[in-house]
Length: 296
Image (tube, rainbow, N blue to C red; front, side, top):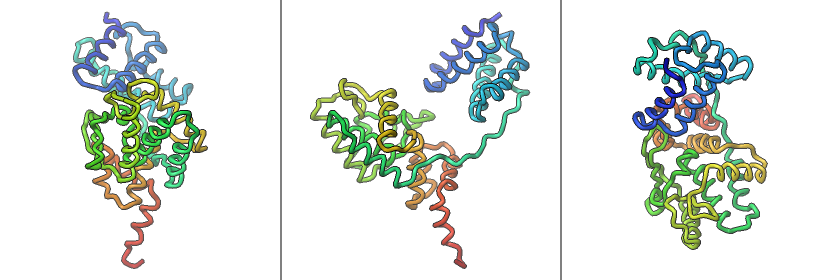
C-alpha cells in the first residue's frame, strides 16, 4: 500500500525537475491533493475512488461555492496526478476519466478605462512618499504594467540587462509556459524607466533585478508589490489588480489600432484565440470596425 503523501511528494519533484513546471503550478498541485486527503481522510493511494472524488467536487460546488475555474483547476490537477500514478504502476485506471466537468463561462476580461489607467499613474506619482526613490520606482513599475502588459511574475523577474532603452525593447525571460519573448517599449515608458535607472544608480543598487527594494540591495518582492497595489488602490480610489492592468493594456492597444497577431506576440499567448477575447472586450474597437460597412 503506497502512502499517498509520499507518492505525492515524488510527483511534485517529478513535476519540477523532470517536467519543468513552475513553482506556482506545483504549489497548486500540493493544495489540491492536500485538500482532497484532508476532506476524504485517505492515507493510501488504494483508497482513491471515483465515489470520494465525486463527493469532493459536490462539496466544493455546494458548500464551498466553487466557481467553474476552481472546479476545473481541481479536475485538471487530479487528472495529471493520477495519470502519473498509472505510469508508476500504483493505479490501474484514472478515476477522473468518468467525471464530467462544467463548461467555462466565457466572461469578458475585466479592464480599466484609459482615464482610470491615467488616474492610477497620477496617484502613484503624486503619493506623499518619505523617499524620492519610491516615487520614481513605483511610477516605473505601474508604467511597465500599463504600457507593456507583462505579467506580475514576469515584472518581478526582470533583470537590469533585460531592458534596452536605446532600442526600446524589454526581454521577458522564461515567461509563462517557459517562453522567452521581446516586448517593444513606448517612448513614454522608456523615459520613465530611464529616470528610474538614473535614480537607482545614485543609490548604488547593484542587484541583478531591475526593480530594487528600498532598504536592501535586492529585487522588489511579491509581498512588497501586493502592499504597493493596496496603497495605490486607496490613493486612486480605483479597485484593480495587476492582471486587470494587463487586460487594460490589451484593450487599449486594440483601440489604438494594433493588429491581433502583433498583440498576441506581445502578450505571450501560445494560442491567438486567447487574444481574440479582447476584441469582444473593446466596444470602441468594434465600433470603429462597424464604420467600415460599405453602406455606412
